[in-house]
Image (cartoon, rainbow, N blue to C red; front, top):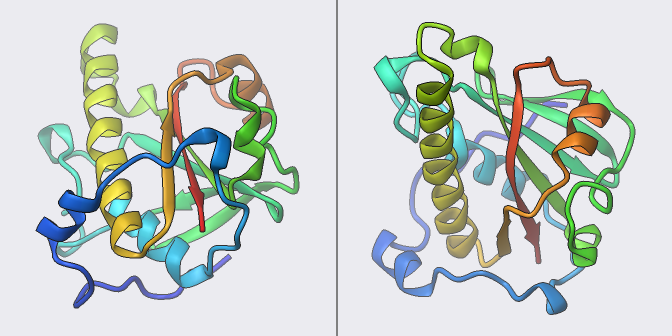
Length: 187
């Protein structure tokens, strides 16, 4: 599924986004639709290329390609965001929003972004180091999502209480890949 080119100019200032940045309460999470353009902007902010072929919107250890994968699930199915080429690759036609977290309101979000570490990309580090680097990357990626969502006037919420076994099974993740958290998007 191709995505429109991301918006990289204009919009809300960084400092205004920081001032307005907040988590949408779970109980009142909205059920509105998010456009392809908005989703494109969010995914690019999370880990898109912003400097040639090897520069991303978030820091990556030793300049490696993003080693945290972003899966997107919604009513059209579940996809993997491919930062190289900026598109979504279909994983399956299942809507996993209601199955991947402990909270019931997650199924109301227009999309859930699932952050998964790709430990195969960090084999030159110890497992503890690879986990630390992945956690740091998810922190940077989710913060970028928050700021972009704020600028786009979208609702956003990070969820760490997830069901990693369900996610791993539904996405058929390799053994060493680890779901870390999800971000809900709504409008």
